[in-house]
Image 1 (spheres, helix red, strand yellow):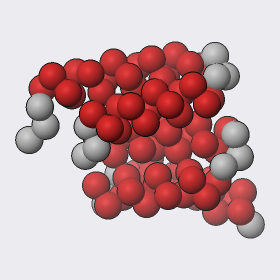
Image 2 (cartoon, helix red, strand yellow; image 1 turned 45 degrees about the vertical axis):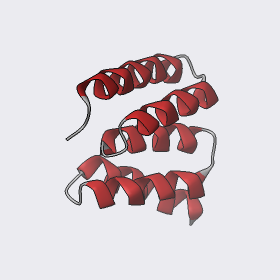
Image 3 (cartoon, helix red, strand yellow; image 1 turned 90 degrees about the vertical axis):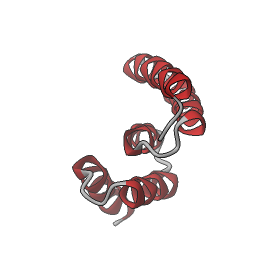
Length: 92
């Protein structure tokens, strides 16, 4: 089980990352999602959030890697499949 303090810290990083993403500040969002992952590596949503930011800056291999990790964490996490399909389309 995750430490509740780290989980709260991870959520704060994720929320800040979401704010940066909405502003089009994708690298800043990636950095913040990475901080969330460092605090709480078992949450697949943090990987798919970072994945979509990677897609926005056309780093599809890194995005695909995050999708794969998210699916290792939760094989039923639909958002990871959706984002993985975006990567496959972009990569041809």
